[in-house]
Length: 493
Image 1 (tube, rainbow, N blue to C red):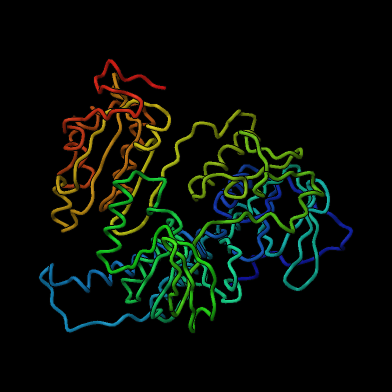
Image 2: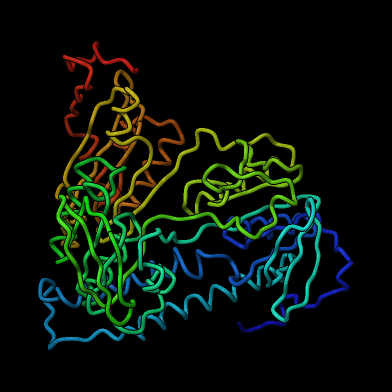
């Protein structure tokens, strides 16, 4: 790591404990913003992370993965350039160049983060921290020496890691996780992805566009089962159209070989067992909280049954003066939620009651095209007995999508029966996340769907597609327990 002069590495006598207003264990995005903010308010702040400046998001997760995904999109443009009237005599993918573009971005982010630590006065300590007493953390530095710090308040933000299931031979095969997949310098000949959630799906499409043969193994009967069936089907069709093999409702029985050389995976599907041979295996089948070896018991911090830090709606842990934010607190696993967690803790430490209850959780899958959702989808509305009117139009109704030759997908919205309040919005199409954000702002402001329908929006833009959506004739889906679909018969359960 460059510029070490800005990273604390001195170790006082082991018996000495340095006092801080706030000690942050784990340097994720939410805790990084917490460090800068509290320090900017005059507090003495120390942030401890064992490896990454800024945590996972700018180093090994959100931003690097989207960087790689965009390179894959450019490759797709090259491959389909004749559609745009551009001919070429072929091209090759240099994965070392793809990796270097990603690394350059990460280096720039690290420098920016270090500059912000210096400007705000927050201290970044590179080392491995663990509690040795209430609100007291011992840090083992890179040179093996130790340093002890105590905070009036302590925030734990140590995140999660890719989970390796106890499948015979899997650990021995040394599979890729998202971390190693972002460091590939060669295109896998045949990548087998274990897991059909958002990480697996994003990497599957990207690696296929780079030229890999890709097989995705999923335990569920459909992709992204938390989404509506039309969304799952649209994703399935997208991946299959790009030449990705999908093995759903499938169990991995055992693994042999070594990822990066040759692997064989025994699977069971519909009661029949067979073997898959590949060059690499990527594990993307869930996350586990990073709470081991933190000495949480010495700090009086309790865990949930699933190993996350137990917190209340204010993100307070069970020990006085200890808070937890982000994924380690069991919050939804998105960087933007860890940032909102920081806001909750910041307000509470400054005397304002702020809770996580009832907040909106926007979500985006960065495939091409994207999938984005806010609020209720149809499956959730039916499960809760919430009546709704459904507005749904294909992306072909969006004029801007036509100019981009990207008309695949649809947008849909749920509107409360008897009122014009928007209950939820889903977009599967180009620019889905940006379109969703406009709807989310309207939902936060309590605006009726008619406000979006009747607003003068710039032509041609993707957001303009909200006008044909909310101008379409809505349908009123029949709830499973009802025999009629009239407005009068639809009542919330």
